[in-house]
Length: 541
Image 1 (cartoon, helix red, strand yellow):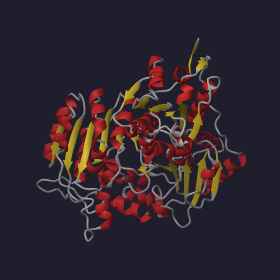
Image 2: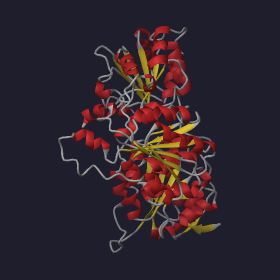
Image 3: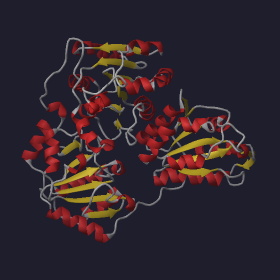
Image 4: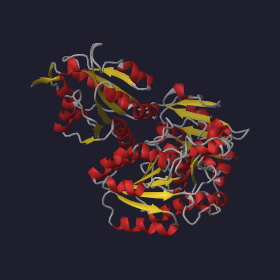
């Protein structure tokens, strides 16, 4: 049945299969958004395009589905820029539906394709009524199969053209990238020669967990992850958790003593390898990635394997007849069990009468929260505490939108993650700076009735800058009067709780008994003098 391009684009995407659309609706994206809704795609209206972009990013990461972002022409796209750039850097399968003004006389006119490319996204466009379906399918397949963020520009002049709605169906995924036999043999030989091998899984290996667990068993490897893959090996007695700045002293020691480090779908960048200090002088380094251009970008490697992580692990397994002890054994397992997490490390309690130590707060939260949780992390000096102390059940329990290192993405991340996994308790950990930067989306969480626990580590400052520049600097630009964030939350319709001591945490227990709607915890934290992970991070700046 003939209809217009905007309707056809919406119907095509719904037919192909997308999980959720987020956005702010204006005149340019009204028709296509309503077409999506009419064809069964859930839509969440947000208070800012930046929040919508990050919600879509988080939803795609935690659901495994392509997500959509719908924005108005010009300023709608620029408002979403930070979230789009984060998604693009993270290789999130996301399609941005961006209305596009034509002609230099429009206030909304800009070079949207060039702008999209500057953010690291793929720029596409719907060119005509005749090509509308083909253009839309191409954008969707690029997002799904290449794990790319695609900006699909919808010119206003084209949206209103007549188009034929052609029946489409979701095509099968592209075949896995299979490693060469020579590379598989070389990697197997390195595993055989190693006495202390460590596997580090990253974003590109999140679907390869079972194969990597088995490879660890057979090759005697310890198992670690980058931050974005946190939880992938949960429950394994030889799982080290997050490698890098968030690692406990015990985990850092075990990784640094490895004689073979194999990164699967992992960049082995300065964060994951502590600027290379977790790689021993005599250790061999291998990187496995579907993208050959990614190999060796962050550090020299001894072997680069172009291949899917799961396919590569399975191919190496086929060359092993028997399991090797390798790095595994009772002593190592005992060390991991006793001191593998920061929760098990003895630390001084810096709490005062009116301010709580972040470590005390984080330990207590880990104990009181249900195991089935999904933790989202904003950026800032505080972020190592919830990342290291709050355990998660699997790789879908931790959402870490940090590729662009922007503060202020946490609240939207938590909302998107919560909608992707409604079976889990969503938990946000944010600093006061990042939370206040994005607080408009608290109304979105309230409106949706999400039982979201927002824990704000409030030091009344941009804490990273305070500790980076030091007490001798003029810190007036990065310190602020204390804000009553709990009271602010009630103005949005959420519940608010101020925490100054461990005794105040009982309010969280009460809320957990019947978690309806968001609870915002204004945790007044004591200065830590600069967190351990921050000192590591700033060595790269």
